[in-house]
Length: 397
Ligand code: SAH
Ligand code: SF4
Ligand code: F3S
Image (cartoon, rainbow, N blue to C red; front, side, top):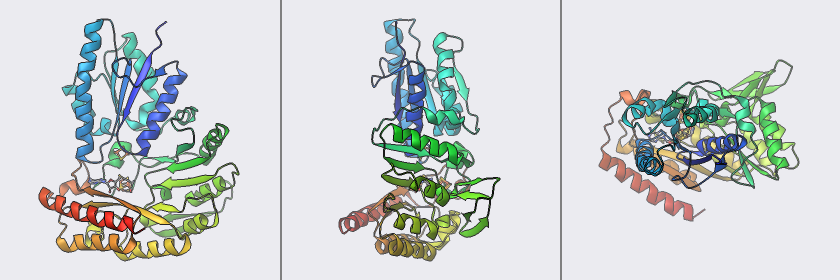
């Protein structure tokens, strides 16, 4: 009997890596086999990223090239049906357009609805439906995360929240992934324990801004939540730091880390916990994006250069660890002076590594209303200067 096969190609961040893995898990549970041979696969899924134009262009060109595969399969045997799915972040930003322009793409599905994919694939393969598009934004079904399949046998990504409600002005994530949604701490802990039973001892927690994590309990749990840099004490709130403390109690875990932390609500509590338990990796990814207070305000980031540098000082003093970051050059209206402030932060902090991006206009975002007035040549010049600087700085760490 022909066993159905699935191939998956992933673009974008660790969130997408984990989503692809969880998807493979639920397809395997339905009896599929995983293949790298997209010429043979019954279901080809392309998990996409919208964060910059370049990321979208790469996925579109890849998905365009799949057309030949479909023609090859259909030429070989007319009865061979396949599923070609564009899934993930681009579904909500470009899905409708791609559905119209690329008839060989017969499935489009938003990140929130990925758990429905085996059902949709079945409908298409059986011939019940020719094409399906689902762009819903809902809380995911919890069972999506619980298939035991992992690509890496030593390390697991564990999602603690999906979406984001920070609305940094340049960022498309809240639109393509939806508002911040939180998993129940008990479910997260259960997933971690399941990984431990598979022999995995290293865990990376994933959230767009892990410090936004909270859970409201009706009992008298005493927790602290940091919102916009302000401490909010509420006896019923279980915070990100509380979640880490719970995980810290699990003896079998050897290493815990988490991405990404937002400077506006990263707390000193977190640093003390990182310093006091040997389970925590002594490294923090703390994107600062720009060193100019004026640009940070336009970006809606909620901190200043000085606040960022003082947070870094505390991290270095308390955790004594290394840092990495993300930077955007060429945000609308960015002057040479603004840029020099960004350069100054790189020089002062000395990150172990830094991801440096050229600003890219994203539809629907607040900054899309501003003129993209830094020329491509200037963006490239600033990008090159920071890359070279960071290369030198990394060598000294
Ligand atoms: N949630 C994380 C990461 C978001 S996306 C955070 O808040 O840090 C990863 C990185 O892509 C961002 O940190 C930012 O540096 C970059 N990025 C996001 N939107 C961008 C845009 N429109 N143009 C250029 N870079 C962008
Ligand atoms: Fe985007 Fe800002 Fe949310 Fe990060 S915190 S995902 S940059 S809106
Ligand atoms: Fe890209 Fe979506 Fe991640 S836009 S960076 S794959 S959350």
